[in-house]
Length: 510
Ligand SMILES: *Cc1c(COP(=O)(O)O)cnc(C)c1O
Image (cartoon, rainbow, N blue to C red):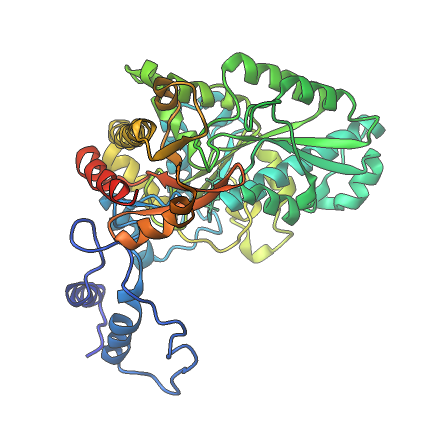
């Protein structure tokens, strides 16, 4: 019989998990044995309804056995996938059951939008962002929303940046600000006497180029301002000279700071005085500062930590970022809530509305005009939205600052263990090159980049690691050569157990 009530549905899910347990740490391998190249069921839409028992059979035989253990295993080190905390999972199941649409702010009908703001403000607290600038729903200018991921948050960041730099350039040229959201990029650029908007950055994540394309700036608008001899450090003098020349060049600039570069986990900025200097230049020349801190922003959790000195290289890389105009972070990475969940913060909530206003739809009006909570319709990309805030809210509530600090420190400790182990290993090379083991360890966050010294071994290294079935790493390219990347982002990390298994696998391959 088909389940009707929520309880019967949950029992059914329990039954499925019993007969097809998901791959999990210590009990099985991280990747399924073999995946059918072209699923035979891909095109056969049943004419009529299938009994649920039959469709469940199809799920358990055709689909579930072929999923990977990406977030179930602490030793899945691919990409930066995060895991799912038990508290987040419970709330995520409830999110589907209650199926709230957090598109419209209806404060007398559902508390969902208020929980969303509460969850964002708890994150602002966890990430040590100053409340007077960033807090949402208060009298200040702090704004933000949950998105589908860091990519969508970067689209918002560059979208607000585009709005700001062009309308500011128009104001400087004509004495009158003009909104891009209202009039379009071409009209405002013409009034502003601007021919191009460039995105200045250092080793930005690929999604910054995608975001630049989506908001009409183009992928080729990305310009590197890395210091000579460095791949990531921002050349502040270069920034200054470009900014001073902006008007003559009929160019407007957005600065995108990489707070946690995806191959190395390192940071593009290095201190409060440095970010202050950047801020001053950007203020003077109407430049928007966006921070892509998808996973790196979480280093801010350690800012007030008693052992902060151990993490000084990391906290130096995130201090001062509160001076930015907009910030991206990911919930589905280090926060360990399920896919999908991105986070976007800004200190200029009115620009979110200028950029994202949903036209004029009377049926979607929330009926309250005085609310301090902005309508999600007018500040984000989507209209209808999943209640992503609930898993975030519940996980923060369940583990608090202490739980998240402990989780992050275990992740960093394991990453640093690997950095030291690889540094000492004569068959492996730790990247990027550092002058001492201590230096290499002190700048390691949650990512470890390395290659095998033997070129032939190195070419196959990532594939061989995956074939071990015990750990999973992503491949990348560093300095033109293949490299392997361990990204540690799961709440279950056990430094001893995962450390030993991983080192055994790596040892066996060289
Ligand atoms: C993962 C990541 C992104 C993209 O995030 P999605 O959640 O996949 O959209 C952007 N920037 C950085 C630095 C990242 O690590």
